[in-house]
Image 1 (cartoon, helix red, strand yellow):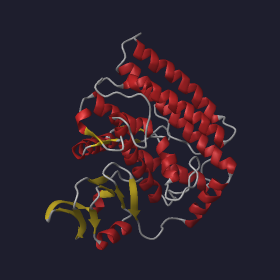
Image 2 (image 1 turned 90 degrees about the vertical axis):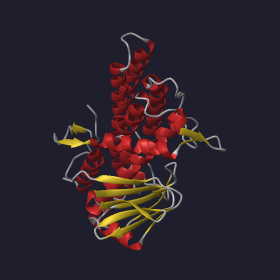
Image 3 (image 1 turned 45 degrees about the vertical axis):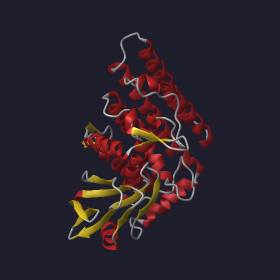
Length: 344
């Protein structure tokens, strides 16, 4: 079992990353700001326009299987570095054959989408218990929507093809985000609908940033298992898009990313002053706010749960790694179906 490791997030501009012995050193404006042993990391994320890394560090990360990725300050993925392709070529061949087979792709995608919808329902039900007064309008919205999502989850499990499945997923997402404002207890931040490119309000900006972090973690988990993060089942091939990482992330959007965003908002750890509006009308997190989100993200990943299949106590940060390994076992033929993660 993989040991739960940390991800190093870089948010400063004009940063130089280089290797010192068996550690990574972060230098800013000529001064050493941080030094972390490489064996304590499984990922490095740079959120800056001007962040460079030495060749020796890139080589060390590749050898140690540490994902080093570069993003814009607002979370848009730009590039990632890696060494020679590792892992079992037979596993990747099985993955490619499974992705090309409509029946197998549909079987995997059904489980992923059904789990995504069911996990979203769990978030709504928890919100109804924790934040809604019995019988009030907000609680009724959450409970009614949760019942509708339960129906959509059953529909997803019996979808006849991928197009129908995506239609069910879209309906479920519309229902979920229509009820999302009822999960917010801080009325200063409003939310009406999910908008991404660009996000038009602080809540959408926060969700988009959290989804970027989640996709990075899922991509790292898949690559560490020898799977190709570009070749998916629900998301189809597109150059530059980590389709399988996006597939895997669907299971955890509500329970990891959305819950992190809701905690920050409802505890008033983040507010409208932490965002800025650009000329294109998009709303983005300020640099100081990104640090708040990254701290909350790491805290969320450290929380523990019992995995329903392995019955082991793990952290949320390990979930993508566990599910990636279960997917690899399915593709090898060790499992009859891919057991997507269902939150209790």
